[in-house]
Amino acid sequence: MKIDEITISRAIIESFTREFLDNLEVDAAIAGAGPSGMTAAYYLAKQGVKTVIFEKNLRVGGGMPGGGMMFNRIVVQEEGKRILDEFEVRTTKYQKGYYVADSLETVATICSRTIKAGVKIFNLISVEDVMIDESDRINGLVLNWTATSMAKLHVDPLSIRSKVVIDATGHDAEICRIVVKKLGPKLRTKTGEVIGEKSMLADAGEKALVKNTKEAYPGLVVTGMAANAVFGSPRMGAIFGGMFLSGKKAAEVSLGLLKKA
Image (cartoon, rainbow, N blue to C red; front, side):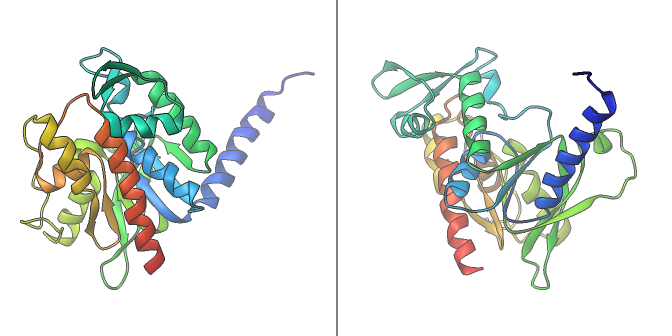
């Protein structure tokens, strides 16, 4: 068979466009394909929820591929290991309560399982604003190519509608910061704003991560390091169990909101 260059181009453009059009209206839209974002998406899709993730970077995984200081290993505690077991990510017991996983295997496996569960992941797309309804409830995302943002080009964005939005953008808590900038200090924090994460205290940070995973604004759930940044809790470094647990809880909180929608 002769390979035709234009057929290759058509295949890419048509298949991508079909998927993008199919995801203009979804049940759950997630900003950020890091560990918590993909975990949340996986558990939502397993419940039949139409879920899409928009990742601004070329690769998925957030800070997980780099492990700790570019040693591509991550640590999880017993509770986090159970989630990795479900994904069939291999772990090695280091000592009681501490398990080590290859960060690249973890990212690749979770990404694959999440996509196979029915989640659509679009990389190289940034969220530059949120959509709101008449009551100021968030009901979608405003998107543009990451390259457009990086080049500072004045190109109008496109929008997608979603019944619930999850901020899984990590330390920067980008969606929550957009809310504060555009709608005012109305987050469900002590100040109404993004408080900002504290310095490292792994034990407290891991515990706070799950506690802080909740609806931060009507229609907006926050998960992963974005949750600790929003509510002002410590960071925890290269232990990732809390990230997976936070993602799972974000899915549970979102399911509850979807039932009310």
